[in-house]
Length: 357
Image (cartoon, rainbow, N blue to C red; front, side, top):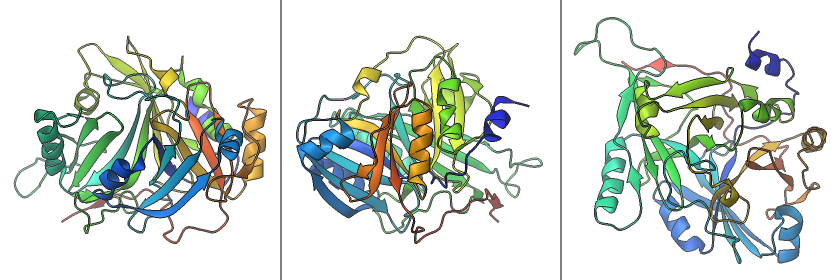
């Protein structure tokens, strides 16, 4: 029995969501709100916390103004929360070499990946912002192709690229010849034709993936498989992660049993990379926190406590939701939120590939 199978046999039924929100720290929210609006994210809630309440939940001496944003009608996963700190503790990881330890990347589907590449490439060429876009690359990630390809038996593939920036890191992907219902919903009324966040990448400060096993045994997420090695021999990872010859990383994915979307992918570089985990803390600028929701928050809090991960007490967050926060030994921070009302747009729980005509 492989490692993932052993872990998954011990999964508690926590009712946990797929990854609900990616949270980005800023000092002035105006630019972030304008930026993400072009991807279709609209504010659905906003609230403030005084410094005393922030200290209790987030451990910071700072007032907080918070914005929760949603893309289209998808409310079960893939949301964004902008945390406007009155006194951020630092500038975060910022623009840095690819696969810098501590980096976080959020992933969206699009129906025009070359348009996005041109947008960021133009900004880079003009020196407007420190963006590093990688050229889109295509691959058959799921073994969906059959027979000899020609004009009539067209290739079935996904094309993806990454954009690394000062305050946010993206991966975009576009599907050709197939669909996965419930995994990425594009809002065609938006300027850049993108979906909610479908999954998230974490470059972690860990010796091995055993440090992430609590995601299953405490939070109730499923390990997709045992840890594996990806490297420069795989054209997708090589391009997206800008791998030099001879470079590789450990990889493991986790997904909610209650949602095929909101998946998490964790990476440990097998070689020398800058380590900026000290800048990947709540209160810094950039992506520093992610959230889940569960109808069993007391149960999850007890499990996290049993795993000696030192959660805060359960208390109201800025939106009046019962919540707690904790950080793990690999530098990843989470907020668990209590939600007992089902999302208006229920998530898919079965992964289904539908080939297009």
